[in-house]
Length: 407
View 1 (cartoon, rainbow, N blue to C red):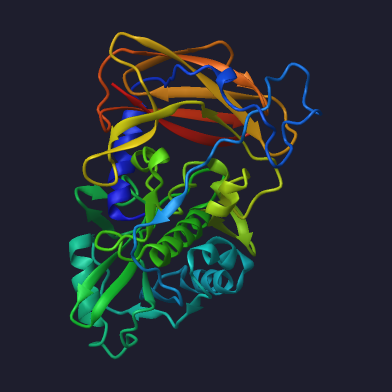
View 2: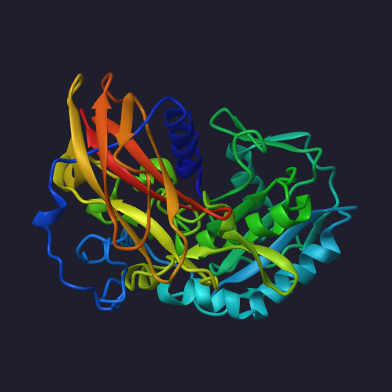
């Protein structure tokens, strides 16, 4: 997650708490009923299922033209007396040698990860530090302090601040508003890429340390796949049809999977890490967050056409998948259920700013199409409308779909 994504996510969470969900007027029967390539909606489907529909196209995280760090090297930075230094170094070593690393980064042009010797800062840790001071502080050390490695453009500095340090940026506070981020600083020696990991409490059933390693993996992956996010964006741009997702979760490859509770898994030895968005898996109609788990992937997607939207990723307007629902009016949208393996019926919760919703049924299974009626109660404030969040829920797993609903 970069600093821009953190601000966007905070705004989206506040917006999602306000109301209910989305719509579109197309009838499901108007869409191609040919079976998909996986044969998931074939003759073996239950007799009461709707005619088979093609798989929904999932979002694709595209490059904005900026470079990745193809041969990254990690420089962990600790303060004297960090009781978790040894265990974190063990984690980082296993991260670099684990199949997980190539599984989550290779399709984005990133190669093997090297981990350099840790830097231990002997100065007292600051009680408070703002991001605006972190880049200059790093620049004063890199190439000047002999205890630090010489500048290497492939280096990513991973800063582990103690629990006593409050990190701030743009008015946000560590642990309250963010759990980590990555950024960069243009110094006289060259661009310095870094990631910041404050110490924050975990979220049950995961420990504080699990959340530390999970957040570390998230920021390391994003730092190498989108190092210069604000000046030369790499993998942080969504395809136009799904641009609204960037308003909710951000568009970097870690952010896209972060809201799902199953995004944190023990995939590097006994250590917990973040599962990462894969365009390839998404295109195949499988779980877009990799490594893929053994349980089937399930979700829903609205069947809608293209409408104009204020571009959340740049200037002007773009055409995106969505539906127009003016204030005081209602629209009914077909919602397609899909899964890549057998599983019980699941429920869907629909929410959105200044919208109320009703279903013919909010429960279904692969191949079903349900009808969602959306009524707009007031104008939305996101890109000329509102975000519809569709949350599919089954046995503790949650998967999301986001749709633009214009005013």
